[in-house]
Length: 203
Length: 156
Image (cartoon, rainbow over all chains, first blue to last red; front, side):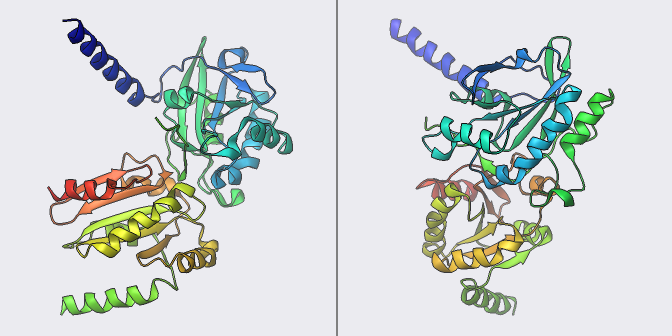
C-alpha cells in the first residue's frame, strides 16, 4: 500500500512537471514576478519597476551570432523607450557549462564593453526562461503593466532583418511599444525568427 | 524517362555538391517539402556558426550514405554573403549530402511553412514520408539513434 501511494505521488509529480514545462505564457497572460542576479551582483526583480508602464524582456546571450547582430539594436531600444516607461530587461538563460562564453564574468564584461544601461540578469536555474516559454536568443517579450500586473503583449523577434538593421521594413518591438504607449492594440503581436536554441542544462 | 532525368539530376547534384552550395528561396524549400518521392526526406536546418548543428552533421551524413531509401537535404541558414565560407566548410568536412543555402532573411514569413510548432531555434529537423504524408519535426539536437527512430515512426 505504502509503495502504491509512493508510486502515485511520483506519477502525479511527473504529470505536474510535464504541465509546468509545457504551459508557458501566452499573449495576455500575467507574468509571475522574478528576481535574478544582475551583472553588478545585485538582485533585480520585475516588481522593482514600480513606475514603469511595461517592460521589454529579452532572453539574450553573449555568444549567439544573432544576439550579437542585435546587440546595438537592443541598446537602442532601451535608450528610446526606458524614459517612456518601457525599460529593457535582458536575461541570459544559457547554461555556462555548455556555453562558457555565457559565464557570469563574461556577461559582466559584455555589459561593460557594450555600455549596457539596463539589467543583464543571470537565469541560473533557467526557470524564468521556461516560464516565459523562451526557445532561442534573442527572444523578446513585451510586457504591459495593468494595475500591479505585467501582462504579455508581444512575443517574438525585434525586426524582420537580422543582418541589416537599416534594411528592416518591420520593427515589431518598436511598433508594439509605440502602440501600447498610445493605448492601441499591438499591430503584430506574435512573430518568429531563427535564433540559437537556448543551451538548456542536461537533465 | 522521368527516372532517367531524375538519375541525371541526382548524379549531377552528387558530383557538384561538394564544391558549390546552391542558394535558394522559400519556393524551392516548399517544393522539396511537398515533392512526391519513394524516399523518406530528412530536411535539416543548420548554420556553420551553430555548434550543436555542426556536432550532429556526421549523424546526418552517415544516415544519408548508409540508406538508399532516405534522402538528406541540409538547409543552411548562414547569410547569403557568407556563401564562400559555407562552401569552404562543406569541402573541408567532405560533406556529401545536398546543401542548400536558404536566402530568406524575413524569418517570420516562412518558419510556419516548415512547421507551425517551430519557434525558430536551430538545429531543427523535419522528417517526411511522402508516400503516406506522415511527418515528424524535432527542434533540438539529434543524438545517436534519434533519426532511425523518427524514420521508423513516419514509415508506420
